[in-house]
Image (cartoon, rainbow, N blue to C red):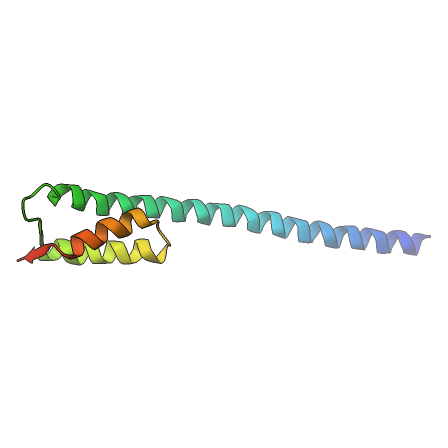
Length: 100
């Protein structure tokens, strides 16, 4: 009887530990997902800012460093699997003339 209680206690402790690990990993996952969403929002806002700064020009142009920055922002956004809204804007801006 005592031996069975020891075994039962060990099994309960084992499953409790596993449940604790999964709970902890779930919290970490939620935090990482929130950070990813925050970074995506910042990247999207930066890309949109560049777009709206120049889109009303008769012939939109980008400075060379703006274009390089835009490409890096888009690469990061694309890596995080952003939505197609930014894809459409970026496709338009890729055809804008680059000035030095």
